[in-house]
Amino acid sequence: MTDHPPYTPPHPTRFEGRLPITELLARARKSFLEIWSAGSFRTEVINTQIIRQRLFLFNMPEAIQSVFVTQAAVFERKSPQMRHALEALLGDGLFISDGLVWKERRRVVQPVTHPSRMSDLTPVMTEVAVEWRDAWGKLPQNAEIDVLNEMGRFTAEVICRAIFGTALATGAGQQVVKSFAAYQSKIGNMDMVSIFGLPDFLPRLQGFWVSGEVRKIHSVVDGLIGDILDGRAGQKSLIAAMAEHSGMSRMAFRNEAITLFMAGHETTANTLAWAWFLLSEATWAEERMLAELDSVLGGREATYEDLDKLPYTRAVVEETLRLYPPVPVLARRASEDTEVAGLQIPRGAVVGASPWLVHRHERHWEAPDEFRPERFLPEATPPAKYTYLPFSLGPRVCTGQHFGLYEAMICLATLAQRFRLRCPPGKTAYPVCRLTLRPGETLPMVLTRR
Image 1: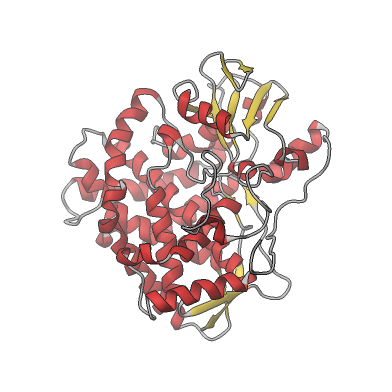
Image 2: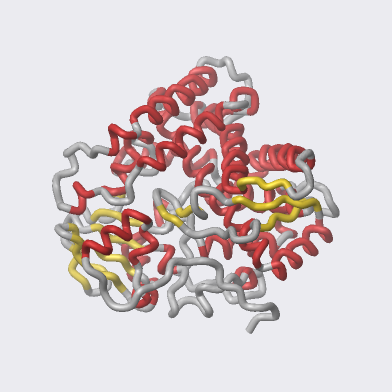
């Protein structure tokens, strides 16, 4: 039971039974979230074949543990769709690499984003939040802004300053954001070469469509890294910290910098946009969060030292991540024949879990489609293990999960004390999945002073 009115935010309408493969492919081209039937949120496993590609998606904790933890070595390689969607941009970056390359890059990247370093990394989040607070304060009352764009710019500024240092990052983040948005818009949801079971070495046409954006991003990042590695930056940065204990090439630094940027910008921007929308619709949650912020912060900006005192603000972010996980499908390719949950998995099959399904599964959550931040309060019963995976899990868990969580909290806590956001009449958010889960292409909201 809850002490507030129920609120179910937008999600695709679920169909019953099965659809013809042609209709499923058409839905998948629009958004992966459109392909799931009502039964997908009740079943233990989705075991199917799409043309020549075998697919296993597991919804139950024991099977998820087997794929991502116990047998992580067998399922280390990312799915063909994900690799081919990103390799033009990321090269052999940590997100899509595997084997010895992945192990060596993880050794270099993980320490610089470790939770123990958050007290050093969060000041830039507060700094940018204050800048946004001041900029929003200069807008006229009831100004309409695109919150998705605003949060994209916000997170780009934060991650750029963290990766490259404040002096170098000025302006560079927005150039990369613009090119990455164009890149994502040209990447299709369906990799037909992989679906037809054709070899990985065959070229994908999407590589030609995105080549211009890739060149722009690489050019900007190469210049920033050159300034750091050649000693012209004179500031602390994640790249400088990585360079202290690494023999990586400049191309490797570029690939990891873009990987960090993509992971730290797009996913957190989407989460923040969704959080603003959810708070605007569930005003009881907004009021409770504001009462907490008024009590703890009293109008000042949020800092690292405040985060432990803001449990409801954190719960809002975590419930947002449950309902709208930034990467809604976690897919791997089996490197050998194996078994999971009593099912024989052939080599080459795509295997994994979908946070979109697991987070809304009827066996794991009460009223799974409702927005209930209290699920994540300290006094609540925590989610069952392996049923909450917004940052993936196992050896390949996102190294920047604490960075993203704290950034979202600091942004919300600092800005929400001064401003309210509401959708204009007739406007709403709707989940669309390309590479990440976004609230549409834009999210127009009206900004008012509190």
